[in-house]
Image (cartoon, rainbow, N blue to C red):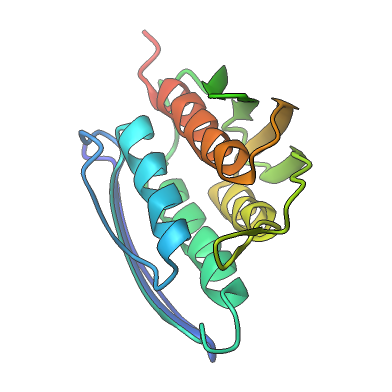
Length: 183
């Protein structure tokens, strides 16, 4: 059975289309309207081996908050739908991922009780024009709507780009392991 889903989400601030294939090869087509976030979503798709298409028209003239948060919500919905009854998956996984001086731990439980536990203090408030606090907003929406208990913890790091990228990659690798079949 194919573990795929398509989700569309339209609000007063965003118009989002997402496709996921949990058994893909990490192929991504990303256009969130937020450059740095595209980079993070590409890393999420590639390192989880989830084929991922994201298209978003958002009110980025206000700021990037609505686009990032709503993509997290829609992607969480898509992953939950693609997982179906979750029968036969590993369910639990943990991964630590380094990126230069940054080291981030991700632990997941595909429990159906979605919540984020975030301990990723990021010093600089911006990476380019991207507000670093939006990383947490994305993962809140994603974890809650996917029904995944997600712990993200920065073990060390000083460069905001490296910390955020390690966070997305660690989450991706943990999801990849938790999604696998467990004979």
